Image (cartoon, rainbow, N blue to C red; front, side, top):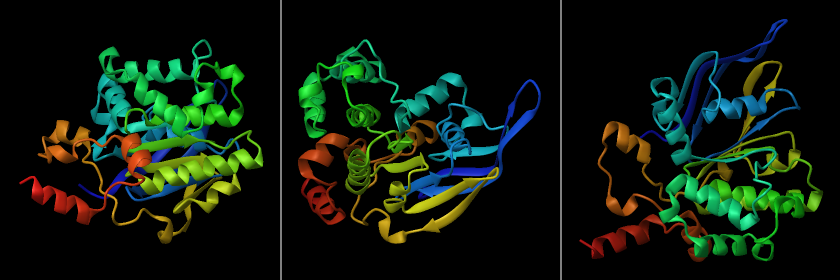
Length: 287
């Protein structure tokens, strides 16, 4: 499979209003590779959230092609698109999208059951996630009882529950104080460096420019590459999971041992995905 996990070709988005057609952006051409953390940077109202929604398949472009993990949205029906999104994306919405009538723990359990069925619900695993993110004492708290930073951390945990290939964050540091913004930036950076997850962020917060390996500027209906930082890409020793959706659609054979990592087990218990040398040694012993 190509290293390119997201590709947009000649994408244009127009919202049809009662009095006019609003062109959000046009002629968008970009590629995002698996080892990148990408920031879409621009002022409020420039179309950052719209672009993320197109990438995740929540809305359709007016023109152009959107290729994710080697597949095209316009070749999927609605259910296939929903399944594809649930399997490959973890999304942290700007407002966190938490259910107000459920506690922190219940929010995670509900989302986990929704994705994998009640039989796959794992309270102990969720308890460990809350602990690792410093929310163990807030597990019985409702969203309205959580601080802005706590809500954001809970939203990130929820986005990672399905072990996604791509983590999308919409304004992850919005409306947070400086200290909390720094904490969220460190969490994002840590997830990126210690897992095989590609991260895509939209924000106008300059702090996030310090962790991105590639920055796109959104301005005046254009999306243009502003700057790249190759040194901020993932380390070579990260092993990438096969894209499961590709296997389903194209029947590519993959090694069973590499089918799925548990993001949290690998990330928090071992600290980092095992490097290629150790994997090859261990694989030799099992032959």
